[in-house]
Image (tube, rainbow, N blue to C red; front, side):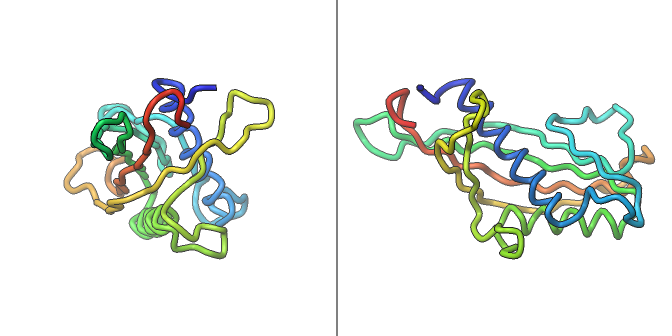
Length: 173
């Protein structure tokens, strides 16, 4: 099967979402009985004017920049901007979750298997999804929103990063 175009993009984003979700689950962020309201994780961007329930985490994607890696071939690196936005119920919770996200992405949590800034992409179109390739993560940074008037934006933190995907064409997965 050829992993290019929209299919490749969808599988990269879905695999990234699953990796982050699994890491947060391993850290206990979705466990019942925590001292904060439940956290929900969305696989889509939250519009700036949409009211967001507190403790919502969303995965949004941005621009893609392609850079040629070899002269005379179609091999290139596609750098895709992503954002993990967390709208916390408190400053402490927002800081805690966002710093965990940063360290998950940077591969700084060996206790949950996150030992490198990369993730495996799976083919979720199959009943038993096989591993198909690996993407690297770079440029991880943490930003805090300032002076937003809406209550759900008071403790909004955003972790931005780039997913680097190298491939040539439909014969190269």
